[in-house]
Image (cartoon, rainbow, N blue to C red):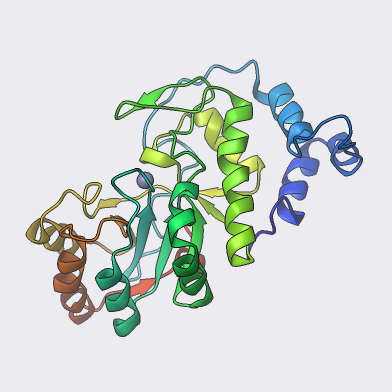
Length: 273
Ligand SMILES: [Zn+2]
């Protein structure tokens, strides 16, 4: 169910609503435009360019934050954000998940890929994990530049398309698969940006349980946060801060959650809501 980079799902999503666009996409003349996304940007600007978003936050219609149903399932999602301070890989966390056969969905920012390319390829080749899109520049998903945590959002539709599609392209080049899921940098969205991401074929994923607060939690805080999990929670954690409390907190909590009857899943293993 992986989405090919600018592949079938993307074209289907676009052409289902506006059939003439398919001709524009397939007849793109690269001598006129070197931007392969120009036709999609033009179509999306025609569709959404006059709409001013009214919502801004982590929970906006269209953002999936939970697993559907009542089964005792938990989805761990690990972000690799790639800021100057967050370019590492938490080997202890990854090795624990591998040893314990705990699946996870890894949201990868393009900046993190450079120094971790071979690690990413190894993780992507392990069916325990799936690779998802955490943006090109780690910017909040906005069509008008709104900020979150002091980080400026994408300023317009064109920047938003680049934020999503250029990282899809990078991840596809490195791993051989285009991601299916998108979580913006900071996990903030306006509702127009969420619709655009969906038109590009992405499922937009937030979270229901804050696992490590940007890898700032202590071991005990991570443990307590995870042990408060309820059936269907999507947990947000970070795999790019070795030395944080995240790995130890996860190691403390996962065996206890298993004892309580919880099963861990990748996002693609379940339906989301
Ligand atoms: Zn992040």
